[in-house]
Image 1 (cartoon, rainbow, N blue to C red):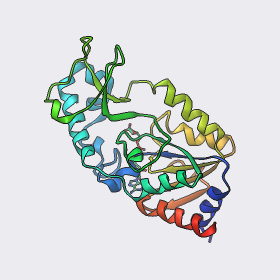
Image 2 (image 1 turned 90 degrees about the horizontal axis):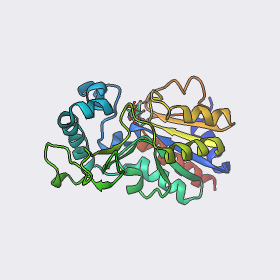
Image 3 (image 1 turned 45 degrees about the vertical axis):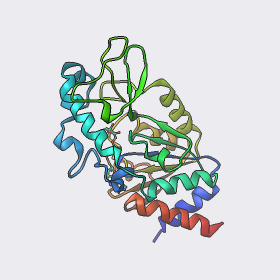
Image 4 (image 1 turned 60 degrees about the horizontal axis):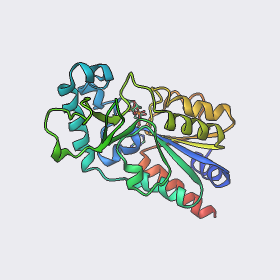
Length: 247
Ligand code: APR
């Protein structure tokens, strides 16, 4: 029986450049619901009605209220032991960066320094026209979305369906996927592109793929070398312990 945890710990210990790619499952134990699966956000709020840039432009008030509700959930959320474990791997000099699909800022709150926000950050507003950004302060905003001083409707600084990934995170994440020799994929259903292409790209460039998830995904059966089954708040701290034991 292969001990995937020990194999993964050995791979990370030997890694010249380890990178993490994280999804909503990373924050599930911080009481932030995931998007898919039982009780997922998209069950209650169909993405084509609430999470596309077209829906926002057609019905800003309706979509704005959804984002306010999501940000209100993020306001009280705290990092979980999984976030702290990734920050510890960075402090140990093992993890070079976290590429996250999450917009909750919890990796930064846990102390991770190099965080590539692939889908943006819900704690900020941005003007699509002049790119002016403001913090999204819930106490400042009612049910109507804010307008920029240039007169344009502002939006949460997150990548909505139908929007491109901003060039800086897109290029930086691709560079990391190409150059890493170990990729730790945590809590993502591997359904959304281009984020889901990053682990595949890393594998094509010879990286060892470690996947931490409560369920198997399309990655598990195709590119994953070590599958850490369980909640990230338990599997990642266990991985850090094994690495420290092996030092
Ligand atoms: N620990 C680890 N994995 C978990 C946990 C947990 N505690 N709880 C759930 N998971 C896993 C689920 O098994 C699933 O594979 O996390 C994954 C969550 O999948 P999604 O909800 O699809 O989240 P994600 O993959 O991040 O979605 C990608 O889609 O909706 C868009 O922009 C949104 O960034 C999001 C993107």
